[in-house]
Image 1 (cartoon, helix red, strand yellow):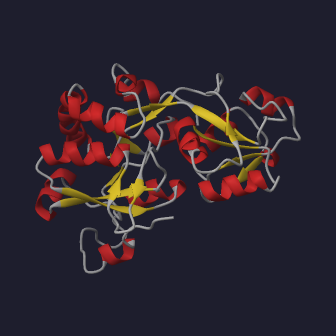
Image 2 (cartoon, rainbow, N blue to C red; image 1 turned 30 degrees about the horizontal axis):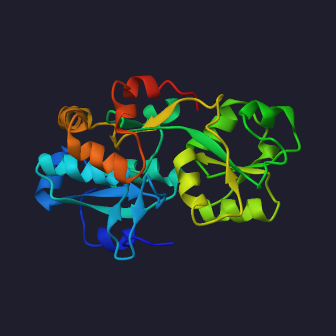
Length: 279
């Protein structure tokens, strides 16, 4: 798995935040223009985010973020791999300036960060053993069979889906990354691995040990955009103005197509709608 530039290396010598004060004050866009980049939290989960071996960050969300920021006078982004459950704390403490990692919107997250309008609208699926012997196709199937164990990433949207559906903790198995989830499935420690459909399909292209179910009918609609610190509402509004025009253009369509997403799926869907998802 590729790794990004160590976060500590970026922060050494920086004085964006006084100890104990949390995220730096003032306009994050102005700060980005001064320093020439913004620091972005990602996870290295293609097609949402991808960290190259040289530390370059790409993927659907970072590519859109970079393009919009360039129109706002910020030259580039620098990515750090941060696990999903640590992203919002890293943002609020000032370790990063923005999250662009497929961090799907839901009530609890929208209460803590300022999301831009969505660029990705996604579905969820299960990775299951070949033939899907337990016929795991919906969340209700999991609820109906207490013996089933489902792997999820810590703090991920998928863990929130199970919690909101009252799937018992005994059925939820935490794995640290995508590789660990597939390994747990292959070893029989779990019966399924819950992730976004496109993530699983991308993994299945190179790993034939599992198959991917159709999108889950009773999983909530979800999507993501960039997430900024809660005080940055004015900058988010400026970002959204540029993003709205960008989403209507060919470059946005090209980025979405490159990473396997439908550009039209994000048109007409609002952050306000997606933030109503439970969890």
